[in-house]
Image 1 (tube, chains in turn brown, purple):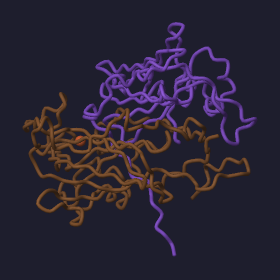
Image 2 (cartoon, rainbow over the protein chains, first blue to last red):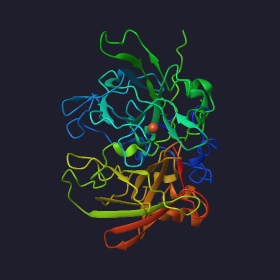
Image 3 (tube, chains in turn red, purple):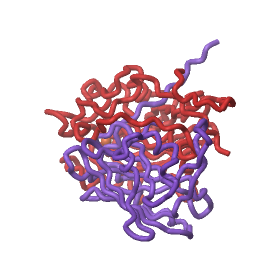
Image 4 (tube, rainbow over the protein chains, first blue to last red):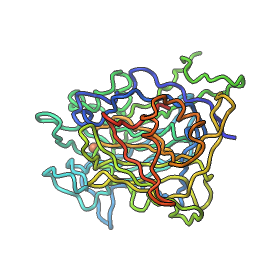
Length: 242
Length: 181
Ligand SMILES: [Fe+3]
């Protein structure tokens, strides 16, 4: 029997709306109708689980065919936790990013910046038994996009996480401390709550920095949680405040 | 002593370049050797102007049949230049009802769908049910939707004995029902 404890409601202002007007592509894609709240059934409580044997790790994006990628080498380390502060062990994280010049190895990216044949644009890492993950990459460059005049995306690494259930799936982006483009970025600013926005910024960490080799950044991720103890009275508590 | 309560990390759009992730072949849920009642599910996604959504990441999760060594219940498909996606999977069976629902009736066979794309700041969650199933009238999730026209946005048409098709509309007339979880 699956644990059908409801997911805790998301904290107001900490998630972007669908209709984030400052980000032009939301205009024709954001639903107009209200979402229908579903109870947590087995469909929502469970979710895909990935094994490293079928989904092998790619934890170093800086080497391809014996060649070394150009740019500032970085190591990124962090933990995946749930909203109860418990580590999420053995969960898959997918990452993808532009190279050091701000170019994606993707046919849709027509930015006039050089491709790097030795940069692996995507990776996959699993958390350990304590929810910890770590990978090696290159600091991605900023790139222009056509959202508005002279629009540039801040340096960022895309993240995809699944967590334990269908309801914990999240796509996010990791940004870098001190990036001057952050204050101008509509995607970052679509999150109303300032503290929630700032939690997407990785901290430079001298203790993670590897001497003579790579800068260290720390980035923790929190997945949606459910109440620790299942309800036993048979009532639906999914709309209670927390 | 009070510990700060962690708050779920904010969602951001998947953007236009998620294809750097693996997905080829992932739309076939029999790819690890699962056998059984194989069905195909196809669909097409359009935006509020009726234009195809050509860069979506569509993911399918089904808890039934239960995951095993040959079937992990998960698929991923990129929408194509016409907004089309397709999955090959095993026909799902009914699954347990929902906590607290009257009589705890079974849910009719369905798969859960997640749509992510440029312009979507958060994933969209929906379901696909299958035309011709007798359980729709008492399905506890379909019954949350009063308007029959809206409910119909979740029910794929049978286009063959083992083939189903459902068009999805992100916005406007005929807008697909999307769920908050
Ligand atoms: Fe990007």
